Image 1 (cartoon, each protein chain N blue to C red):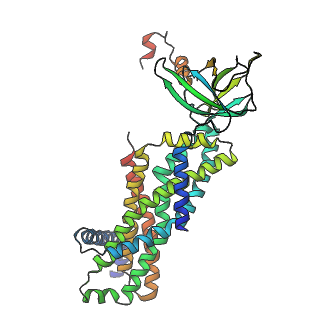
Image 2: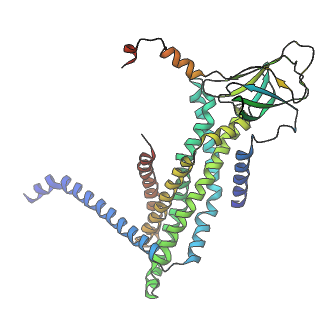
Image 3: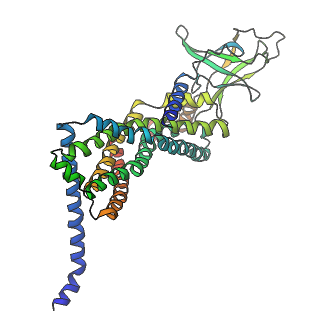
Length: 265
Length: 146
């Protein structure tokens, strides 16, 4: 009887476990985020740490972000040229490329590259500190890891990503410009001119707002997964992968939500 | 690497925001032409004769007295244009690519540097034309009220 009961209710119990498990995870992340933000706002602050993280997250991500942007801009230009060509509107290409890059692809691609590069690094770094009990040691020295490890990374990412987005926007437009002028016979001056005349401050601004949110997500996922890592070296690897994947998904989800907010209808 | 990226970004930004503001006097000679409507014509747009690029639009300003658009065209010095040439604004596609086309006239004397092209035809307001076809002004009011 008991076995039968178990057989019948097993799927339901599995669903329950899954639901409560994921809810618990959401709760844990939220609490972690709250503690991180509190540490960020209240202090004490570690300017040295913030600067070091800013260099690691921002400056050293420039090559990878710009390479992504230039190829994306170039491919985007070719695709829009093809699409525009179907109704004789190839000449609208500079405007669409610029709009697509500033509002969407600049921030999202920069964030995704950072999710791969930075989120995983942060998770591995903090996870290794967790595995070697450095975080506990820090606490015994009365240094709050949230102030010393988490807050500087969140601040640095939230400042660095908008700046990287500006670079990605510019380089992406340059990629489109290169393809348009070298292979599609566009007049370089007219291309540049139509881009500058068309783009409004809010096109770039909304992308930067997205970038701030994405920066927060990237640092938060890295810190959370590293901080809660368990199981030694393998746990550190798992934390890095987890950080990257969850940051990527959250970036896309929040991108959709933010875009609906920024779309005036 | 990072420094290189920043340098390239800054260089392209400077290019984006300064291009089209060039004087135009550096290469070629300058002509002016007045149009009733320039439409989507932008500084830096091509000036073509028989489909071949012979210069660029170096400046577009509004003449405050006549409300005509005053354009300055920098023309290749190799190309001499008769004084009764016609300038008109056309475009490559439906939505852009506006440029100036010069149709050379037959007068014996050529336009001097700084001269003005007298015969001009401005941009055609395509959407206005479409609007007139789609909703003719003479249409009775009841058909227009959906």
